[in-house]
Amino acid sequence: MKMRRNIIILLLLLTSLLALINGMEVFYRISYVLTGFLVVSYVWSKLSINGIEVRSNLRNRSLTIGQEGEISVSVENKSLMPKVGLEIIHASDLPGYGLSQMVSLAPGQRMAWTDKFACIRRGRYEVGQVMLSSSDLMGIFKRGKPAGNAVNVTVYPAAVELPHFGIPPADLPGEGRYRRRTHFITPNASSVREYNYSDGFNRIHWRSSARTGKLMVKEFELDPASEIWLMLDLNKDVQAGTGTESTEEYGVTIAVSIGKRYLGSNRSIGFIMYGQEYRVLRPERGSHQMSQLMETLALAKAEGRVPLENLILSEGSRFGKYTTLIIVTPSCDDKWITSAQHLLRRGAKIAVVLLEANSFGMPDTALLALGTLMANGIQTYLVRKGDDLSQALSSAGEQSIRPASFSR
Image (cartoon, rainbow, N blue to C red):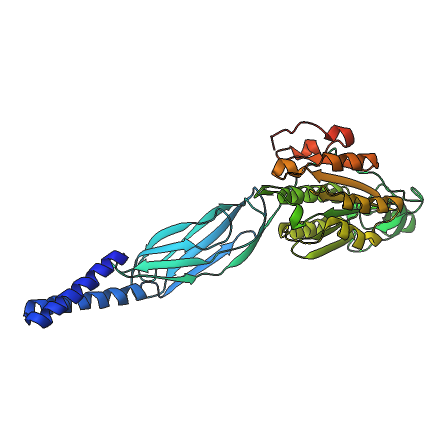
């Protein structure tokens, strides 16, 4: 396209020069024709992308890795000029999403279609905006401009089922005696009260209702359970690997999988990380906490500069006799293990998921750190690159020291 334009401009300059030198009418006419041709082509290319309205509608703005998203796109020509060879290029930072389409529209014509895209990397991305590109009929001038409405789509990390993952229980006193009221239905019905319009029919206690002549519902209580804290090490200096095969991605997947396991069992879980920003989720139960955890981990990046031992020390007041701390880290430095030992002496229970950075390309091996952790009685899981996480996180201690399996 650029070469065509340069050739025509060169011919225009040449004929104009010959017309001035020789004064021959034929060269003047050729130069006039070329000038008019260039002017018409320029105006046509400019008008060819005006009067186009683009609308995008994303079906679901929250997706998980492995899911397929859908976006509906409509293009309407609101001008009186036909649009020939209009190229629509989808502008997005979503990995693997780079669709383009060529359309021709008569005046007033509207076209609509649905595009699908695969979610292959967690994060928050912009989709929906397109780049309109068109040229004149001879393809000499090309014009482009953005159009459409950009919307955000959040891709959550995919959780792995961990049916056999276990952690040491905290020493919570009053087990079976101290209870707390809850809106969840549990095996522990403690009392009855009068029916409220927001109560479900499955809470009605029919015997009490018959006796009092009013609808009565059961009230439930929770058995006492320790708080679980999950700490993800996102210190940039200890990470290894690239892309999906990195300690960062393995750590995020493990964190969201552990969160799903315990929140799905109605346990109270909190979360701490220091990546691109410091983030703490206070221990809570239920689907709202799971949504917050997934949102946080979807955007987590290993860009922190805070060593794990500093993070443990600064947050140490949160972990006491009645809490269990789960640490996910690729660090082989024994300084953070010393910090963890201080928590053990205060009565906190600790479990560690140690990512073998050596298998991700780092020179350091985690075997020494693993031995130190086990010698201190800290329940430890070792995860290598390529491991099946359901299996790697199904047994602790000496069973974690096994040959790597490369089926994920």
